[in-house]
Length: 171
Image (cartoon, rainbow, N blue to C red):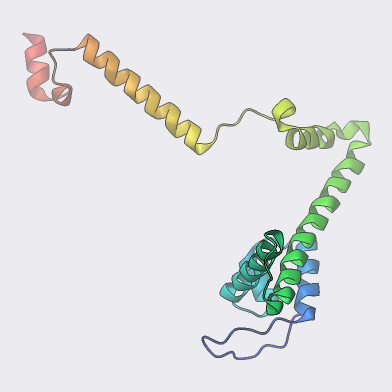
């Protein structure tokens, strides 16, 4: 349940509550994805929301590395876990719905969708990342420049298309 709206003082950290932990899990479990939207629903600033998550991650890092975490960070750790748990529950619900739809042979697309995403290496479309596309473009530009240098060694490539170049070509 969202907290009652209050006017906070700038620079004062919003107080995290058990209700907020329960609410963030519920909201994520219902499909609210953006942190700004979650923060609005919880009546906290997006910066406070991100601070809660970061403090929870720091607490977890300390646990993972065998360090003694700050005791105050435990509630933020539980907030972060609730955030993750809600997301996982939402994914589980969607996968269950798709699986149920796929039991009907006339709805084969549901099964194809799951295979494409869960076993992308075997069934997924071969999509290139933005970096791969940029690298391919650069490779082709370099190849064209190399071919141009071989095919047109005496031509100043910067002058191609200029009136001077066209006039010389017609001579």
